[in-house]
Length: 502
Image (cartoon, rainbow, N blue to C red; front, side, top):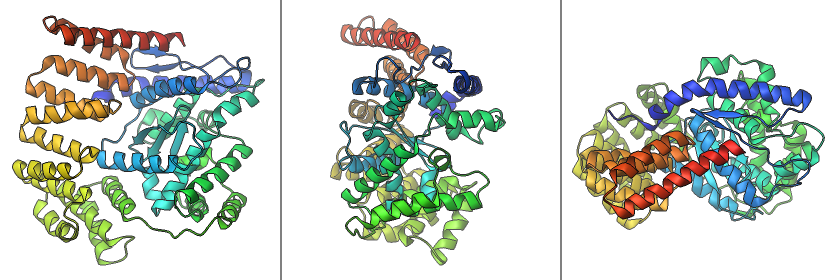
């Protein structure tokens, strides 16, 4: 029986999340009072010690060390939260951050991006170049420049090394730890999704929030650097003040303020300062990118309780007021596919295809209609042609592999995913689908290898080692594969031991 990535993580998630976050919360609370020792985070059956970024004797942590710890943190985070498997959305966020990073004062512009499947408004950056975005950010940010202003602010915290500088400034008090940050962000990413987590006391939640708070000076610096980055990237610097206003407004209309606002407090003075800084920048015309609205439509479809309700909402927008008519039409087509109405979806989508037959978002939507009709040959033909026009495109590659998979063309899907896994070695969704495909194509050794990589990226080292041992045993007669798997097993065991030693 095949399971989705979410189902595969669910067993470990439910067992460990309460224990992990509650023990971390308690430890953080104690640490804030008496300067406790580094915290212990538990993921799956392994005991993982996430270290402090630095200590009072060593000074600032090195950039290389930040990178190493950031990768460990990312694996632990993925093991605890629901991440998006929407390749088109992932690609959009990655491209947006890459563009901003080119204009930010980052020494290392390589970033690892995680998109969290959660409707709350939040974004975060972790030392070592890890940037996270909740899908709910799209629901709050009304245009691309507002969305970019939040990302630019987080990149500013990274570029100014505020985490490491905070450690240096707090030599004689409880030092923030990566474990505390992990607990805080896991809590934010799972809020409302688990009764045990939701029942945690406000005192405990506040203790974790403190792990993410920066000083007023840090926030002012991040505002300044972020606004400068926006302007250099050709975005409207006024969007930063607009986004702050959006967040402040949320405190009036929502029972709980956005997570981002809890850890980045906004005041009227901060909004005024952001507007003043932006007014000193060269004028930039707000482009109001349609691409952003298309991605926002994808999030809004998924955010509705049912596809049928999403259909009604987007039908109303097409007939009345909308932020972008193309996005409203696109959202309606996606909702109609989800509601089991592929013929209606094609009628809705066709005007967009007539104008832009080669646009990836529209081609993928058209292929979804084919798949809903079980017209697999049309879907694979359409996506193959699109990929030839845009070689290497992540969303189209995953779309084509998925279409072949659903059509039962497992060898074709396998070839595509094997190539793609060499390009996107750190993408769990690629390895997950490759493992499923290997299994149905009859490559059992390949199943174990791909599953091991998936579990490594999700910080579940015992399961990764288990799959690699199976692979080593089955590959006895294939010297090259046997040697590769043995070496990878050694790598995993070292990762596991390093994590325990830290």
